[in-house]
Image 1 (spheres, rainbow, N blue to C red):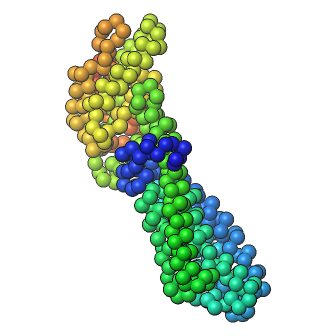
Image 2: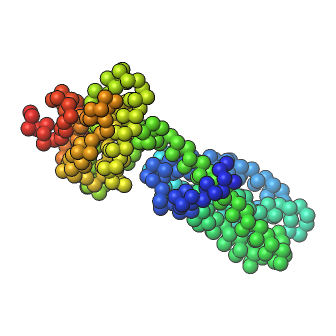
Length: 381
Protein backbone atom coordinates (compact mmCIF):
# COMPACT_ATOMS: atom_id res chain seq x y z
CA UNK A 1 0.00 0.00 0.00
CA UNK A 2 1.09 3.54 -0.75
CA UNK A 3 -0.40 6.56 0.98
CA UNK A 4 -2.73 4.24 2.98
CA UNK A 5 -4.68 3.34 -0.16
CA UNK A 6 -4.84 -0.03 -1.94
CA UNK A 7 -2.48 -0.34 -4.90
CA UNK A 8 -5.42 -0.95 -7.25
CA UNK A 9 -6.92 2.43 -6.32
CA UNK A 10 -3.55 4.12 -6.60
CA UNK A 11 -2.95 2.83 -10.13
CA UNK A 12 -5.98 4.49 -11.69
CA UNK A 13 -4.93 6.29 -14.84
CA UNK A 14 -4.99 9.92 -13.79
CA UNK A 15 -3.50 9.19 -10.36
CA UNK A 16 -0.66 7.18 -11.86
CA UNK A 17 0.16 9.97 -14.31
CA UNK A 18 0.29 12.49 -11.47
CA UNK A 19 2.67 10.28 -9.49
CA UNK A 20 5.00 9.48 -12.38
CA UNK A 21 5.35 12.75 -14.27
CA UNK A 22 4.79 16.36 -13.11
CA UNK A 23 3.56 17.82 -16.41
CA UNK A 24 -0.08 16.83 -15.74
CA UNK A 25 -0.23 18.63 -12.40
CA UNK A 26 -2.64 21.52 -12.04
CA UNK A 27 -1.23 25.01 -11.33
CA UNK A 28 -2.64 24.87 -7.81
CA UNK A 29 -1.00 21.52 -7.07
CA UNK A 30 2.27 22.83 -8.51
CA UNK A 31 2.09 25.92 -6.32
CA UNK A 32 1.31 23.95 -3.16
CA UNK A 33 4.01 21.41 -3.91
CA UNK A 34 6.55 24.16 -4.60
CA UNK A 35 5.78 25.75 -1.23
CA UNK A 36 6.20 22.44 0.61
CA UNK A 37 9.45 21.58 -1.17
CA UNK A 38 10.84 25.03 -0.37
CA UNK A 39 9.83 24.70 3.29
CA UNK A 40 11.52 21.33 3.62
CA UNK A 41 14.61 22.44 1.72
CA UNK A 42 15.01 25.25 4.25
CA UNK A 43 14.47 22.87 7.16
CA UNK A 44 16.99 20.29 5.91
CA UNK A 45 19.48 22.99 4.93
CA UNK A 46 19.29 24.52 8.41
CA UNK A 47 19.91 21.18 10.10
CA UNK A 48 22.88 20.35 7.85
CA UNK A 49 24.19 23.90 8.09
CA UNK A 50 24.37 23.63 11.86
CA UNK A 51 25.61 20.03 12.07
CA UNK A 52 28.25 20.05 9.32
CA UNK A 53 30.86 22.17 11.19
CA UNK A 54 30.59 20.02 14.33
CA UNK A 55 32.63 17.28 12.66
CA UNK A 56 35.62 19.63 12.28
CA UNK A 57 36.83 18.81 15.79
CA UNK A 58 36.97 15.10 14.96
CA UNK A 59 38.81 15.76 11.69
CA UNK A 60 41.37 17.86 13.54
CA UNK A 61 41.99 15.06 16.06
CA UNK A 62 42.18 12.21 13.55
CA UNK A 63 43.86 13.67 10.46
CA UNK A 64 47.14 15.53 10.23
CA UNK A 65 47.68 18.96 8.73
CA UNK A 66 47.16 20.05 5.93
CA UNK A 67 44.40 17.44 5.31
CA UNK A 68 42.49 18.47 8.42
CA UNK A 69 42.66 22.11 7.29
CA UNK A 70 41.39 21.22 3.83
CA UNK A 71 38.48 19.28 5.30
CA UNK A 72 37.71 22.17 7.64
CA UNK A 73 37.57 24.55 4.69
CA UNK A 74 35.23 22.19 2.83
CA UNK A 75 32.95 21.87 5.84
CA UNK A 76 32.78 25.61 6.45
CA UNK A 77 32.02 26.26 2.77
CA UNK A 78 29.30 23.57 2.78
CA UNK A 79 27.83 24.95 6.00
CA UNK A 80 27.73 28.47 4.56
CA UNK A 81 25.98 27.17 1.43
CA UNK A 82 23.42 25.23 3.51
CA UNK A 83 22.67 28.25 5.71
CA UNK A 84 22.29 30.48 2.65
CA UNK A 85 19.60 28.11 1.38
CA UNK A 86 17.98 28.00 4.81
CA UNK A 87 17.71 31.80 4.96
CA UNK A 88 16.28 32.11 1.44
CA UNK A 89 12.75 33.21 2.31
CA UNK A 90 11.52 34.47 -1.08
CA UNK A 91 8.45 32.31 -1.82
CA UNK A 92 8.52 29.83 -4.69
CA UNK A 93 5.95 30.89 -7.28
CA UNK A 94 6.20 27.72 -9.36
CA UNK A 95 7.57 24.21 -9.25
CA UNK A 96 10.64 25.10 -11.32
CA UNK A 97 11.84 27.45 -8.59
CA UNK A 98 11.39 24.61 -6.09
CA UNK A 99 13.40 22.27 -8.33
CA UNK A 100 16.25 24.79 -8.38
CA UNK A 101 16.29 24.99 -4.58
CA UNK A 102 16.13 21.21 -4.14
CA UNK A 103 18.84 20.75 -6.78
CA UNK A 104 21.03 23.25 -4.94
CA UNK A 105 20.45 21.42 -1.65
CA UNK A 106 21.55 18.10 -3.14
CA UNK A 107 24.43 19.65 -5.08
CA UNK A 108 26.18 20.80 -1.89
CA UNK A 109 26.81 17.31 -0.41
CA UNK A 110 27.46 15.88 -3.88
CA UNK A 111 30.27 18.38 -4.44
CA UNK A 112 31.49 17.88 -0.88
CA UNK A 113 31.71 14.11 -1.44
CA UNK A 114 33.35 14.48 -4.85
CA UNK A 115 36.05 16.83 -3.54
CA UNK A 116 36.69 15.11 -0.21
CA UNK A 117 36.97 11.60 -1.66
CA UNK A 118 40.38 12.07 -3.38
CA UNK A 119 41.69 13.83 -0.27
CA UNK A 120 40.72 10.97 2.05
CA UNK A 121 41.58 8.06 -0.22
CA UNK A 122 44.20 5.78 1.38
CA UNK A 123 44.06 7.71 4.69
CA UNK A 124 42.59 4.76 6.59
CA UNK A 125 45.75 3.36 8.16
CA UNK A 126 44.24 2.54 11.57
CA UNK A 127 40.83 1.65 12.95
CA UNK A 128 39.98 5.20 14.03
CA UNK A 129 40.86 6.71 10.66
CA UNK A 130 38.97 3.95 8.87
CA UNK A 131 35.89 4.67 10.98
CA UNK A 132 36.03 8.44 10.40
CA UNK A 133 36.74 8.02 6.68
CA UNK A 134 33.76 5.67 6.40
CA UNK A 135 31.55 8.51 7.61
CA UNK A 136 32.47 10.41 4.46
CA UNK A 137 32.00 7.33 2.30
CA UNK A 138 28.41 6.80 3.47
CA UNK A 139 27.32 10.37 2.69
CA UNK A 140 25.60 9.36 -0.60
CA UNK A 141 23.39 6.91 1.31
CA UNK A 142 22.25 9.67 3.69
CA UNK A 143 21.43 12.14 0.93
CA UNK A 144 19.64 9.65 -1.33
CA UNK A 145 17.51 8.51 1.61
CA UNK A 146 16.71 12.18 2.26
CA UNK A 147 14.67 12.35 -0.94
CA UNK A 148 11.85 10.72 1.02
CA UNK A 149 11.30 14.05 2.82
CA UNK A 150 9.97 15.74 -0.34
CA UNK A 151 6.71 15.21 -2.31
CA UNK A 152 8.16 14.08 -5.65
CA UNK A 153 7.06 12.17 -8.73
CA UNK A 154 8.88 9.04 -9.85
CA UNK A 155 10.66 10.95 -12.62
CA UNK A 156 11.79 13.68 -10.23
CA UNK A 157 13.03 11.14 -7.71
CA UNK A 158 15.11 9.43 -10.38
CA UNK A 159 16.56 12.68 -11.69
CA UNK A 160 17.49 14.05 -8.27
CA UNK A 161 19.05 10.75 -7.16
CA UNK A 162 21.14 10.37 -10.32
CA UNK A 163 23.94 12.88 -9.49
CA UNK A 164 24.65 11.27 -6.11
CA UNK A 165 24.54 7.79 -7.65
CA UNK A 166 26.96 8.95 -10.35
CA UNK A 167 29.28 10.49 -7.74
CA UNK A 168 29.27 7.25 -5.75
CA UNK A 169 29.95 5.19 -8.89
CA UNK A 170 32.80 7.47 -9.92
CA UNK A 171 34.31 7.25 -6.45
CA UNK A 172 34.22 3.47 -6.68
CA UNK A 173 36.27 3.46 -9.86
CA UNK A 174 38.70 5.90 -8.28
CA UNK A 175 38.91 3.80 -5.13
CA UNK A 176 36.32 3.18 -2.43
CA UNK A 177 36.87 4.77 0.96
CA UNK A 178 35.10 1.93 2.71
CA UNK A 179 35.04 -1.32 0.72
CA UNK A 180 37.11 -3.27 -1.82
CA UNK A 181 35.74 -2.92 -5.34
CA UNK A 182 33.79 -6.26 -5.53
CA UNK A 183 32.00 -5.46 -2.26
CA UNK A 184 31.62 -1.89 -3.44
CA UNK A 185 29.39 -3.07 -6.31
CA UNK A 186 27.05 -4.64 -3.74
CA UNK A 187 27.03 -1.34 -1.86
CA UNK A 188 26.14 0.45 -5.10
CA UNK A 189 23.22 -1.94 -5.57
CA UNK A 190 22.11 -1.16 -2.01
CA UNK A 191 22.32 2.56 -2.74
CA UNK A 192 20.13 2.05 -5.81
CA UNK A 193 17.55 0.18 -3.73
CA UNK A 194 17.57 2.97 -1.15
CA UNK A 195 16.98 5.46 -3.96
CA UNK A 196 13.97 3.42 -5.16
CA UNK A 197 12.50 3.15 -1.65
CA UNK A 198 13.08 6.87 -1.00
CA UNK A 199 11.37 7.73 -4.28
CA UNK A 200 8.39 5.54 -3.37
CA UNK A 201 8.18 7.34 -0.01
CA UNK A 202 8.32 10.69 -1.83
CA UNK A 203 5.54 9.52 -4.18
CA UNK A 204 3.49 8.50 -1.15
CA UNK A 205 3.82 12.03 0.23
CA UNK A 206 2.75 13.43 -3.14
CA UNK A 207 -0.22 11.09 -3.31
CA UNK A 208 -1.33 12.13 0.17
CA UNK A 209 -0.99 15.80 -0.80
CA UNK A 210 -3.07 15.26 -3.95
CA UNK A 211 -5.78 13.48 -1.94
CA UNK A 212 -5.94 16.26 0.64
CA UNK A 213 -5.99 18.95 -2.03
CA UNK A 214 -8.78 17.24 -3.96
CA UNK A 215 -10.80 16.91 -0.77
CA UNK A 216 -10.32 20.57 0.12
CA UNK A 217 -10.63 21.83 -3.45
CA UNK A 218 -14.21 20.81 -4.18
CA UNK A 219 -17.54 21.70 -2.69
CA UNK A 220 -19.14 18.45 -1.56
CA UNK A 221 -22.67 19.37 -2.64
CA UNK A 222 -22.09 20.69 -6.16
CA UNK A 223 -18.66 19.33 -7.12
CA UNK A 224 -17.52 22.87 -8.00
CA UNK A 225 -14.25 24.28 -6.69
CA UNK A 226 -14.42 25.69 -3.18
CA UNK A 227 -14.08 29.45 -2.78
CA UNK A 228 -10.64 29.20 -1.19
CA UNK A 229 -9.25 27.19 -4.09
CA UNK A 230 -11.13 29.39 -6.54
CA UNK A 231 -9.39 32.49 -5.20
CA UNK A 232 -6.00 30.82 -5.56
CA UNK A 233 -6.81 29.66 -9.08
CA UNK A 234 -8.02 33.13 -10.04
CA UNK A 235 -4.78 34.71 -8.81
CA UNK A 236 -2.81 32.34 -11.04
CA UNK A 237 -5.03 32.96 -14.06
CA UNK A 238 -4.87 36.75 -13.66
CA UNK A 239 -1.05 36.58 -13.51
CA UNK A 240 -0.93 34.26 -16.55
CA UNK A 241 -3.27 36.51 -18.53
CA UNK A 242 -1.09 39.53 -17.76
CA UNK A 243 2.08 37.75 -18.87
CA UNK A 244 0.58 36.36 -22.06
CA UNK A 245 -1.63 39.42 -22.75
CA UNK A 246 -4.60 37.12 -23.29
CA UNK A 247 -8.21 37.86 -22.26
CA UNK A 248 -9.63 36.48 -19.02
CA UNK A 249 -13.35 36.58 -18.31
CA UNK A 250 -15.10 36.09 -14.97
CA UNK A 251 -18.81 35.37 -14.85
CA UNK A 252 -20.80 35.78 -11.63
CA UNK A 253 -23.98 33.70 -11.53
CA UNK A 254 -26.63 34.08 -8.81
CA UNK A 255 -29.72 31.87 -8.84
CA UNK A 256 -32.88 34.00 -8.69
CA UNK A 257 -35.22 33.75 -5.67
CA UNK A 258 -33.33 30.77 -4.29
CA UNK A 259 -34.04 31.66 -0.66
CA UNK A 260 -37.74 31.07 -1.32
CA UNK A 261 -36.96 27.46 -2.28
CA UNK A 262 -35.28 26.77 1.05
CA UNK A 263 -37.95 28.62 3.03
CA UNK A 264 -40.91 26.94 1.36
CA UNK A 265 -39.65 23.47 0.41
CA UNK A 266 -36.71 22.85 2.73
CA UNK A 267 -32.98 22.55 2.32
CA UNK A 268 -33.11 19.13 0.65
CA UNK A 269 -34.98 20.59 -2.28
CA UNK A 270 -32.68 23.59 -2.24
CA UNK A 271 -29.67 21.26 -2.46
CA UNK A 272 -31.24 19.48 -5.42
CA UNK A 273 -31.70 22.78 -7.25
CA UNK A 274 -28.08 23.75 -6.54
CA UNK A 275 -26.75 20.42 -7.82
CA UNK A 276 -28.80 20.65 -10.99
CA UNK A 277 -27.70 24.22 -11.64
CA UNK A 278 -24.02 23.33 -11.11
CA UNK A 279 -24.35 20.36 -13.46
CA UNK A 280 -25.90 22.54 -16.15
CA UNK A 281 -23.24 25.22 -15.86
CA UNK A 282 -20.39 22.72 -15.86
CA UNK A 283 -21.70 20.98 -18.98
CA UNK A 284 -21.40 24.25 -20.90
CA UNK A 285 -17.79 24.96 -19.92
CA UNK A 286 -14.55 24.01 -21.62
CA UNK A 287 -11.95 21.85 -19.91
CA UNK A 288 -9.81 24.93 -19.30
CA UNK A 289 -12.64 26.80 -17.55
CA UNK A 290 -13.34 26.51 -13.83
CA UNK A 291 -16.58 26.56 -11.86
CA UNK A 292 -16.35 27.89 -8.31
CA UNK A 293 -19.07 27.87 -5.70
CA UNK A 294 -18.54 31.36 -4.33
CA UNK A 295 -21.19 31.10 -1.63
CA UNK A 296 -24.77 29.97 -1.07
CA UNK A 297 -26.43 30.10 -4.47
CA UNK A 298 -23.60 32.09 -6.08
CA UNK A 299 -21.19 30.64 -8.64
CA UNK A 300 -18.12 32.16 -10.27
CA UNK A 301 -16.93 31.05 -13.69
CA UNK A 302 -13.24 31.57 -14.53
CA UNK A 303 -12.72 31.52 -18.28
CA UNK A 304 -9.10 31.97 -19.46
CA UNK A 305 -8.34 33.00 -23.06
CA UNK A 306 -11.95 34.16 -23.39
CA UNK A 307 -13.03 37.66 -24.47
CA UNK A 308 -16.36 39.16 -23.44
CA UNK A 309 -18.00 37.92 -26.63
CA UNK A 310 -16.96 34.35 -25.92
CA UNK A 311 -18.17 34.54 -22.34
CA UNK A 312 -21.53 35.92 -23.50
CA UNK A 313 -21.95 33.02 -25.93
CA UNK A 314 -21.32 30.52 -23.13
CA UNK A 315 -23.75 32.33 -20.82
CA UNK A 316 -26.50 32.37 -23.43
CA UNK A 317 -26.03 28.63 -23.92
CA UNK A 318 -26.52 28.13 -20.19
CA UNK A 319 -29.63 30.27 -20.14
CA UNK A 320 -31.03 28.38 -23.14
CA UNK A 321 -30.35 25.03 -21.47
CA UNK A 322 -31.83 26.36 -18.24
CA UNK A 323 -30.62 26.08 -14.69
CA UNK A 324 -33.03 23.30 -13.82
CA UNK A 325 -36.51 23.40 -12.35
CA UNK A 326 -37.74 24.62 -9.01
CA UNK A 327 -39.82 22.29 -6.81
CA UNK A 328 -43.06 23.84 -8.13
CA UNK A 329 -42.10 22.96 -11.70
CA UNK A 330 -41.17 26.47 -12.81
CA UNK A 331 -37.82 27.14 -14.46
CA UNK A 332 -34.92 28.23 -12.29
CA UNK A 333 -33.39 31.40 -13.65
CA UNK A 334 -30.20 33.29 -12.77
CA UNK A 335 -28.86 36.82 -12.82
CA UNK A 336 -25.42 37.07 -14.39
CA UNK A 337 -22.60 39.62 -14.36
CA UNK A 338 -19.62 39.44 -16.75
CA UNK A 339 -16.23 41.16 -16.40
CA UNK A 340 -13.13 40.78 -18.56
CA UNK A 341 -9.62 41.72 -17.50
CA UNK A 342 -8.45 43.61 -20.61
CA UNK A 343 -11.77 45.21 -21.58
CA UNK A 344 -12.39 46.49 -18.06
CA UNK A 345 -8.70 47.27 -17.46
CA UNK A 346 -8.61 45.43 -14.16
CA UNK A 347 -5.47 43.50 -13.26
CA UNK A 348 -6.30 42.64 -9.67
CA UNK A 349 -8.31 39.47 -9.13
CA UNK A 350 -10.41 40.95 -6.33
CA UNK A 351 -11.37 43.98 -8.42
CA UNK A 352 -12.29 41.68 -11.32
CA UNK A 353 -14.60 39.59 -9.13
CA UNK A 354 -16.09 42.67 -7.49
CA UNK A 355 -16.98 44.15 -10.88
CA UNK A 356 -18.64 40.92 -12.04
CA UNK A 357 -20.50 40.84 -8.72
CA UNK A 358 -21.67 44.45 -9.13
CA UNK A 359 -22.95 43.71 -12.62
CA UNK A 360 -24.79 40.66 -11.32
CA UNK A 361 -26.58 42.95 -8.82
CA UNK A 362 -27.42 45.30 -11.67
CA UNK A 363 -29.04 42.35 -13.41
CA UNK A 364 -31.00 41.59 -10.22
CA UNK A 365 -32.17 45.18 -9.88
CA UNK A 366 -33.17 45.29 -13.57
CA UNK A 367 -35.69 42.51 -13.10
CA UNK A 368 -33.60 39.31 -12.69
CA UNK A 369 -33.02 36.61 -15.32
CA UNK A 370 -30.67 38.99 -17.13
CA UNK A 371 -27.01 39.32 -18.12
CA UNK A 372 -24.97 42.50 -17.60
CA UNK A 373 -21.56 42.99 -19.20
CA UNK A 374 -19.43 46.04 -20.02
CA UNK A 375 -21.50 46.83 -23.12
CA UNK A 376 -24.87 46.54 -21.43
CA UNK A 377 -23.66 48.44 -18.36
CA UNK A 378 -22.44 51.31 -20.55
CA UNK A 379 -25.69 51.34 -22.49
CA UNK A 380 -27.80 51.55 -19.34
CA UNK A 381 -25.59 54.34 -18.00
